[in-house]
Length: 630
Ligand code: FEO
Ligand code: CA
Ligand code: CA
Ligand code: CA
Image (tube, rainbow, N blue to C red; front, side, top):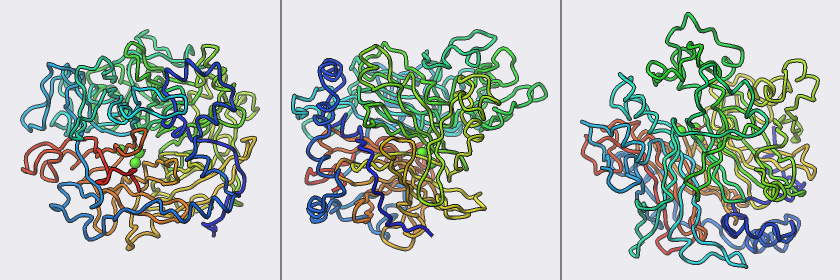
């Protein structure tokens, strides 16, 4: 029904902060200089030549020159080669590229800790796990240590050394503990410490090999027992306090990510409900909100609630503990002493990730997916221009407006504000704090469009926002934005806000099913990242067709050509995307390789049929040293 080549003509003037941050400024230089820069000067300085070239759709001249240059030239992995290597026990990469493994689960982040290397007869202690790379590698970002110069150019060292912030989304008990369920609090602590985030310095040696810098003072682990702060209006709400009065600890199921123009990392809490359960099911009846967020007696079988009362829904001392999860959390990569901050202004739902930009008034804008079948796409807009908020000592993420998307059949859409000022919400909620904490219920009332599992968002150089809708096996009724029922293999939707930001125009970029049987074959799009030249990196999480494992592909957005760069191992998911400032090094992850089963793969160890496979980062470079994706 929809014309997939439909062009969006509105221009919001948005810029991807990918360019902003990566191309031109480190946090320190920004903080020092932002006061002196006018908004215009800053954007001009940040946007840079590459980006400006790609911005103006109306310029035929620029479009033509862009078309003449092939953005994606590498030799793709063919369907035949895609799963040929050792029956999927090891990855496959384009012959123009090479890869190396970095920071697998169990890598010490400090000197003096013994590495866990996949011995099936043992596991790390919980204390050691808190000083090691966790499991479930997912969203991440690379922050150079060096500052950019006046022209926004980074020194060469910025491409050879930096801080990697990386999410550890999850690890099943069978993988982390080597058994179905924890038997004591030590088992629970091991599982909890394998979750969360790692902040680690990494560097490249003269031979081109990347490794962790274990003696860096920047390294830290953030996990389920790390002290947290909250900000935003709901921070001091009774909804976030428990009768036990226990401290606010931990982040969990850290899925995808974002980053801010002031140089901080954003980690997004997704399936937090799965870690809660009820030791006394008879004493627990789910509230409407607990139901809507998917809490159940057993969660996903992690069993934490059996030994850690914080996660016991039937323990009245810990009522509301679950409201402390489901937020976006800000981490300062450069300051180990700073507690991560949960931003209640961005709403509580199963946060997949966030793509940030600024609108024409200088306000920070963030686009966010809530990954569940029939859940929604959200937008946050800061209360004031973000530089002004920073200058006044406030986080731009602490105050603003939260919206949810309604996709109309005619290719337009509307951002509906989740505000207690709306009578429809005022009649159901007692405060804005409640609206934010139970954002899903508020969005239901406003008539948001139920989507086919919104995963990552990213913003292309022309200002369009892309969002992967990974699949929805339960959809029975198609609509224009979710045109397949059921939707087995997913699609990618995109939109562009109108200049004032209240509405948007959208179209469908690609339906995965249409690629099956072709050299572009992929399914279940999940990780997405648009580079400043107009390449779209697509990562998959689900059963691929045509004999493939999960994969990393690169699309030339304008030419709509997709090439396969990397294919993972059996049972894994390819996720997480980060680059060095010069983009000659790209980091992605293999998550849950073999689902922990050593008969499927032993990666990254040599194939021996015994060693436990471990989640790890894959460092990808072009053999000729060119930009990754080209
Ligand atoms: Fe954690 Fe929706 O992927
Ligand atoms: Ca995902
Ligand atoms: Ca997924
Ligand atoms: Ca995952």
